[in-house]
Length: 95
Image (cartoon, rainbow, N blue to C red):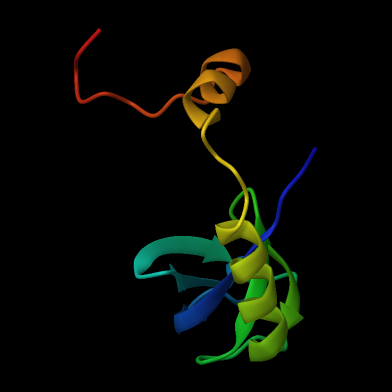
């Protein structure tokens, strides 16, 4: 299953239009995101991001609804799921 998360565009780098990127905030965590597939995205707008690529623009109300739904998910088995998928976060050099 794939999951796209909404985030707010904080800044955009258009120095290379084909490789248009931006800083997107996900609850305060900033990530570099490819924005070339969503040319209508601008600073302050919300985009759905999957695997570091913005796949569509959404309005603020839709972004809030999706984030609320995600917050309500029961993630008590998150660590087990990460181990199964191999997506466990790095532990800062611990093995």
